[in-house]
Every structure is written in C-alpha cells, then in structure tokens.
Amino acid sequence: MQQARQQARPNTTPATMSELERLERRMERKWYDLAMAEQRGMPAHTLERMYDAYLRTLDEYVQYTRRAGGRQQDDKRLAS
Image 1: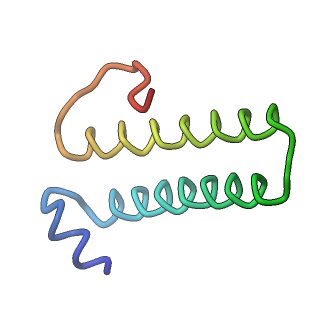
Image 2: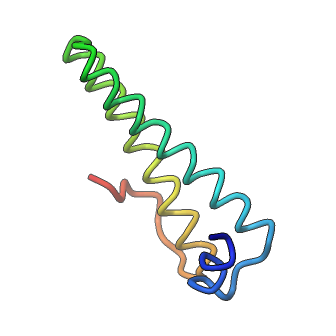
C-alpha cells in the first residue's frame, strides 16, 4: 500500500510519506470517533465540536499534501 501511495506522489520523500500517513491516520481516527459518537447518541454540540476537529485535521492533511506536491497554498480553510 505504501508503494502505491509513493507511486501516486512520485516527488515525495520517505519522511514526507510518513508524515502524510500520520495525518491520514489521524484524519481517519477523527472520522471514526465522530461516527461512533453519533451512533452512541452524543449531544449535537459534541458532534459539532468533533466535526470541526475533523475538518481542521482534513485541512491540515490537504495543505500538507499540496505542499508536498510543490503547490503553495494560502492558509485559508480548504474543507469548508
């Protein structure tokens, strides 16, 4: 799987790939936690806070991916 990711982004270094993988795992975990909280009937304000945290993580992942790909982006929110 890692080899497939490196082929998809040929300009990335192993250090960059490990950071991307870390960010991806973090993003997936936030989404999983949100889904589980919803299934457990957590209050709406808690779900909204968790969703906002997921979006921040998604933004971080997208920004890092773009920087790793050589495209500079400003610090605006990308996921909203």
